[in-house]
Length: 187
Image 1: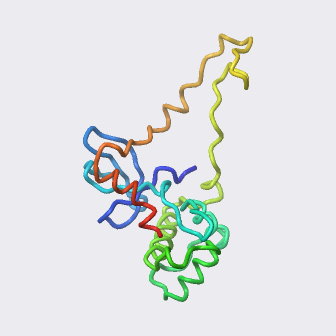
Image 2: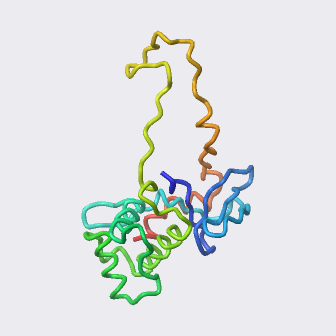
Image 3: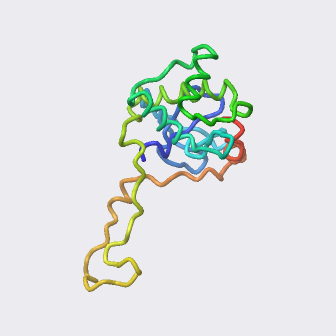
């Protein structure tokens, strides 16, 4: 999934991609300008992957809502976050029909539209963006975990080397608080 390492930083406009983790912070890249900067551990970071929106039945992950928006708008840009309250309400009803109208605020809907449009402009909203990665299997092992006859086959290490490790957010109090409070931010 292309959207796994996208973050929002409290107090900073826009969305960012986690590039790598430093001893005392993170290197991030603005998704629209591709400009890389570093931020300290005290920054309040929210992984979009950890954010969900309330419905009357359950909490729906933000990326599922993005996928609904993308399908409803044929993977094109959606309404502006500066649209009227009525337009935003219609947009939200079409994107997540059973959303909890008391716990999902207009500010959440505006942020949803804004973030979707930022990701679309940056090229992250495509049909391939929402395909979940298959679990990796180790070459040379069967489904039961037994070693097969081809024991000399080399293990594939290259795919893991291509992907930077997911930064751990536990290093700072601000990051912990942001992770725990993500459900409050989006409704």
